[in-house]
Each structure stands twice: as C-alpha cells, then as structure tokens.
Length: 181
Image 1 (cartoon, rainbow, N blue to C red):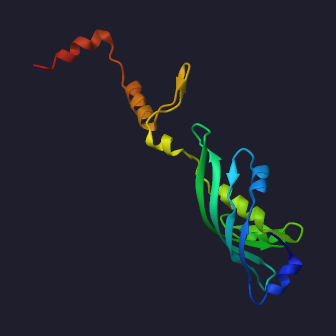
Image 2: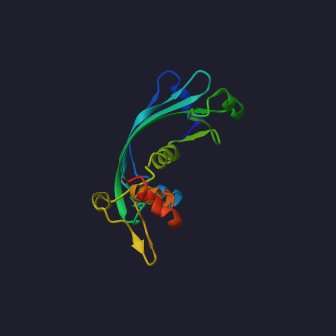
Image 3: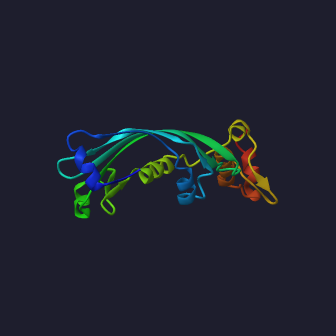
C-alpha cells in the first residue's frame, strides 16, 4: 500500500481506515534476505490521518507469522507477529530537530507514504535478538565442534570465578596449617 500525499488530502476531516490482508512475503525476502525465510499474509488494521499542519499519522496493528532462522542452529522458527505502532510523517526535514530522538518521526519520501515498508521495518525491528526452536529452548545441549563448544552464561561466570582465585605460592602453603590448632 502506497499513498501519494495528494490522495491523503481528502482525509483531513476523517482518517483513512485500513482493513487489509497483505501478502508482503516476496518484498520481505528481497529486503531482508538474511532474516526472513517466510512471511504469512498479514492482517492489517489501522488508520492514516492527515493533520492540519500537513503532517501525516500512521496508526497500525499487524497480525501474522514470520519464519526466521534460529540464532543458534539456523533451523527455521515461526514467530507470531502481534504488533501495534504509530508513526508521524512530515514534509520538511528541518522540522526533525523539533522532535525527540526516540519519537517515531520520518520525512516523506517523494511525497508518498509507503505503508508496506513501514510495516516490514517495524516487524524486523521488533524481532528478538535470540530466537530458538522449541527443542533448543527445552534442551540443555549447546552447539560444539572440533576444539570448541558453547557454554552458558552461568558456566562462564563459574569458570571466571575459579580463574580469578589467587594461586597460593607453594612455599607458603605450610602456613595454612599454622592456624588450624
């Protein structure tokens, strides 16, 4: 879904209501080929409002499923999508300084609003960094190979504590027995 600014002018009085099922799988695989293995059709609801100051707001809810590689084994993992986001689009790039860095404010490109790109960008941005298959979550086994293995954070911290203990000089070891009596 792509809307020209001129199309949105007629929605000054009441917002454009969006209730669509979008198939963005091909576009998602093209833009995020390393991340997206599959994308189900997305149920999109929301609205686009044209404000009096020529700003445009996009409020969207997205439901669907995305298949991404496991961060441990690269096996496919289906992740449910239940996403709600709101973004503001402005014309003048100089106005960006009026907003906080954390605000979702974007400059309109070519006087058009590309809702598909906004949806895909937000889906990818909300994916967790660690995605595991159900088997990987349930099991304790971690990947290993020749001369290497992955350890848990807890095992790493235990090893570090042992390494950090100071070694006693063997010449002084007899002093350990001095205070035992």
